[in-house]
Image (cartoon, rainbow, N blue to C red; front, side, top):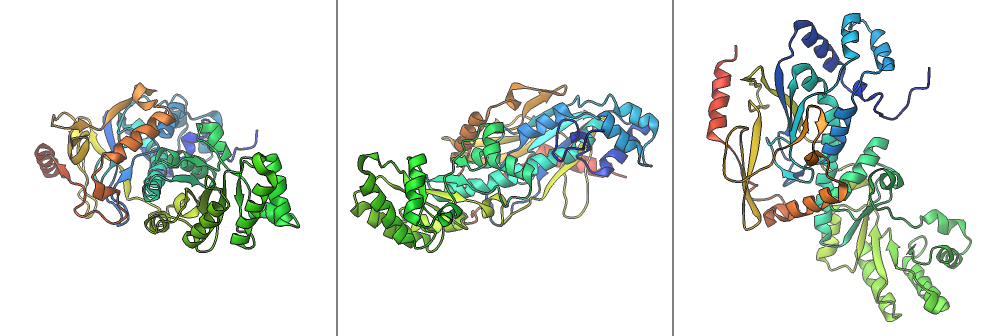
Amino acid sequence: MNPRPAWITADNVALLTDLYELTMLQAYWREGMDREATFSLYSRSLSSTRNFLLACGLSDALDCLETMRFTPRALDYLACRDEFSGEFLDWLKDFRFSGTVRAVPEGTPVFPDEPLLEVTGPLPEAQVVETVLMNQVHFQTVAASKAARVVLAADGRAVVDFGLRRIHGTDAGLKGARAFYIAGAAATSNVLAGEVYGVPITGTMAHAYIQAHDDEMAAFREFTELYPDTILLVDTYDTLEGVRKVISLAREKGEAFRVRGIRLDSGDLADLARKSRDLLDEAGLTDMQIFASGGLDEDKIAEMVRAGAPVDGFGVGTRMSVSRDTPALDMAYKLTAYGGRGRLKLSTGKPLLPGPKQVFRREEGGMATGDLVALEEEDHPGRPLLVPVMEGGERLPEGSRNLEEVRTYAREQIRSLPPRLLAMEKADPPYPVKISDTLKEYHEEVAEGVE
């Protein structure tokens, strides 16, 4: 037998699930419970450091649904366990997701209790995809929502993703780079994200290159011979002395000098940026850019921008890649209808709205003014956010937008939010989301029928 891959592939994605999904699947199969069901994926709340969430991860989630198969290797593994009968495993051989998915397009700002997506199909199919859908949509929504704040704080200055080395795992590193780009990051250091998704990649040097040379000036000289349009890292020893060496290199090379900028990676970045700018301008290098990195997040960037620090771009790593302040959302994937009847939970603190739903976003003059969560069949003023992205297990055009289209859409949608939601502070008042009267009545009706 071939070695088991340590990477999620189309051949093993069906096992990227919680065991109880498979035990329930067998129970549904045994009881013949295969009528149509609808599940809703949504977040119950916003953290104190988020004014909105940016929906992301749909494309990869649909990829998983399209390719989910129980391969002979997967079935052999399940056959070794006591929970599953041979007849059930034989049934799994032909498993295919054949359902429908409606979702808000990636890059849509969303709020608590609003479905990011709804899955409708035979109960076993709609149930067993829960884990992989949440895995893909949850993380990328966390990542995109954090990156959106960082980009807003930068106020038009470039943000580059430097987070691969400390992000939580390889899949997160790849998917995170995609989510950051959708949210407005200009590029990533992640080469694989460039190859897989087409995210622009960028990078120059690390301190080790300077340290490996006996002389900082010699390191600058050699690197710029190979990469004349580079950005030079100047803080390995003495930051301002490093800037002076760049100026000396410019004089030495004359018209052949093409270095685009310098990078500051430690110390008081705002103060060093001002002093560096003064030195560069006095030397006539007014076009040289200043790039800052090192422990940055949206709060530190916003502080530098408010202080007028002459920084042209920011490299943001750990704090964005792991979404340090809000690393998880209270996201859930819950059954809301089965066999033509609404379903709900009445658990304390975990409310659930029954039935397939639609979200209507009211807009005035291009500005979002409030949302209404309603039953799918209702008609209300505003733009319906949930659109069909998969039918009969096959992706539809709305689920096939390319990365640049998603990124452009996300930028437009973020700009359409009220200004208070784009600030770093908690919005007061928060964005208004209401529940339709019809949905409220339906909730009461379903609750009364619960035994």
